[in-house]
Length: 529
Image (cartoon, rainbow, N blue to C red; front, top):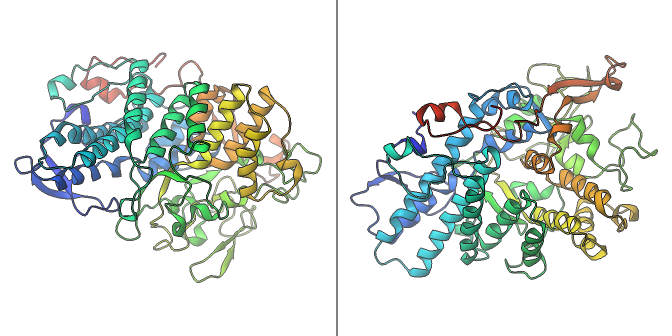
């Protein structure tokens, strides 16, 4: 039975196991014997990390945006939320609310009880506290970003309290998050391999920048990112030195670019996202399919958009940003098999088992996802690849956006951010690499497009559309797949996949789950729900 943080008394059973973050923890001791040795604090802290982000929520979140479509209702009825046909009883809202408060509960348990632990090293104790505060801040940011005002619970509470606790104003929750992340700056810049995946100083700083980005507090965002990029306050962070595609391969996880991720390990703790992403010929189901709108957003190699006269609609993938093929499986893509051979994927209408709408397992858009493809995945579906939550590329893009908004984005900032990302992506044309010398809305648009291409399918697109207040434009109307010419007079032959509806009067915030309001009459509802 699923338990809810705010409404269930915690019967003190702490999960414990090995010190690694890779494996789930299992019951061991009761409250009577727990908290009596330093290892207990570590085991309690370790139990906070698996809640950081659920694998399915991470990958299905992208289908709430214009980047992809989910044909199934896996992922808590994401499809219904994406097309606007959801209500206050939608399971996605309840699942996100419950998951985040379950994570907050674990953090509060540690923070409430760590003072009981005898003989724990003072520095280690402070580090554990900082980690728990950073994790708790992460959960509250997700809640605040989706629901606005939310109950701010910073300790274990009784059932009676839970039934009356009101929503805390967003401004107060925001300040709490910022204060937690400021405290977390005492964390180390890095850890030994056995502690990979823990919150670092850099992760706390970058998360704070992301929180402030959503509040349009540009100077503070710029200052934090400058401290990371130029002042090296979080250590020697940089872009991964290999190709963009290699960045996401399991053999390169925990690389220099990763600031925060959810750790997985082959066999011991795997995630099954690959099943939802790859073609049926490779064992996938294609529950999540990139959109034509995402494909169209990628630049040509000359740095221009597809509005450029050189773009050929009959050869749409030629001379495009290399990140397109690193992110999206399209007609003609070649995927490496475990034995080193390659399979050519055909997605055009009538071209084979992976073709658009050829079966219920196939893509409805004509595209699959290559970004997280793991040829070593067990049964081609169960992978030990990590889920990257924050990476250095995002810090560069936040810095670029903030400096542009401050009218302080010039040649130097371009070279540090957009040019650096494009060089890593594989651009060589000077028109794509040289500083364009524009400012204001023109530069904003360049940075926004770059952000979409660099971070596609990483769960950040909806957050961006909300904070830019463009969701009401791009999430209204048809989402499309490839051009089939089955109906050439409709949308120029591009197949209509899903009719999206975004009501700006209410959809910028999700409704507070009705199931929570049934249990707690003090919870108010968001406007127009």
